[in-house]
Structure formats: structure tokens, C-alpha cells
Image 1 (cartoon, one colour):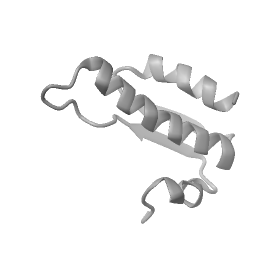
Image 2: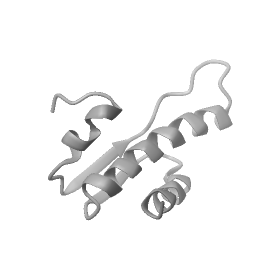
Image 3: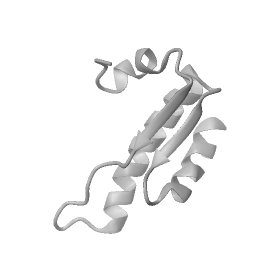
Amino acid sequence: MGYQGEEELGKALEGADVVIIPAGVPRKPGMTRDDLFNINAGIVKTLCTAISKYCPHVSVYFLELCFHLFWLLVDVAYHC
């Protein structure tokens, strides 16, 4: 769609009916699972906070192995 960065999330999400969040960053050498989760959790939190602001009634889908943990972040983002 041509949108990049956190500052353009509102424009990218405007009018959306469905949001698909793919797996986050890949695990790099020397990175622990906790490191990976924390990075990806930050990405998911940013996205879900923007979703709750710009298109709160969309269906959100995760393509992620730890999606059950990320749903906790979705709950927090929607109730902030």
C-alpha cells in the first residue's frame, strides 16, 4: 500500500475490514527466546494500539507461533 513506519499507521489502517499481522522479526544468532518475544511483543502492541484507535471493529489475524501470548497484548491495548 505504500505506507511505512509508525507515523503512517493511521493512514494504513483507515477503512480496513481485516488486519493480518504476520510473524515478527526472525530470531538472530545470540538472541534468546525472551529477546525475540519482547521485540515482537513491542511490534504487536504498537499495531494493536493503532488498530484500536483507527479501526476498532476490524477482524485481526495473527500468523505467529506465539499468538496466544500476543492476544494478552491485544486485550491490554484495547483496554488502555
